[in-house]
Length: 305
Image 1 (cartoon, rainbow, N blue to C red):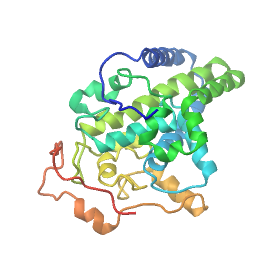
Image 2: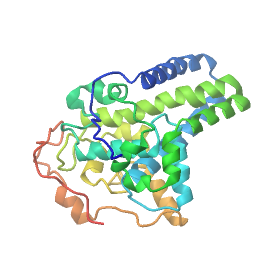
Image 3: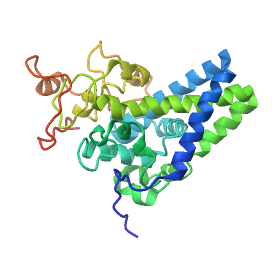
């Protein structure tokens, strides 16, 4: 059966499974504050780095979606497993959704543009429309590279299992404080950090490059997302493994990719040349704060690979 067309930006109907899951996690994240211990806090911080920093930043985003570098298959799989523990779905789902976002950024069909509302772009988009997290059959056409791999197909369908296993392990080792902080509060913080890239960095910040969308750079969003907040840079050069283009633009994920390259775990790393960067930069005479780019303007592609 051929894959059907999916309206990723649909606001029709509520996905009750997603809404209930997010509701429960938010309630238990508040409960976690009443079970605070120093070791539980440290566990949550370490898991935030592993699951959001490695899983989402190094894995789902820069590796699985944009293929901005190459790494051994076992490392690919490890990053994907880490990412599933953020409650953001499996690799085929996440990759498909993000590729659609770049294709239709801030235009009709973008799953989470602030032009449809600030709160829509931040979190409401996740609970309306179809629940597609395990629908590999229809999502596969947007992620054909991942669909070829049985591991990614299985992981997408059973994306919730690693988080359940992690939760049981934390409960067995550290009791209720480790479970509440290491799963529920940590996941909620990670979700909002990721969602800020969809909302905040398409509303507030500074623009360094000409792009066809509203993307902007945000220093403080970059700090809590390991470099993902340099969003205008990323939309100008989607396949670049480096989002912070200068030393002032702190990009912890890029630093880790460089470290991986030094020990032979990353190669074919994509970054724009100095000339390519200069070609798209907005000059000092042009508006770089709060600019809204003409959605019908020219498509600016990433550097050839």
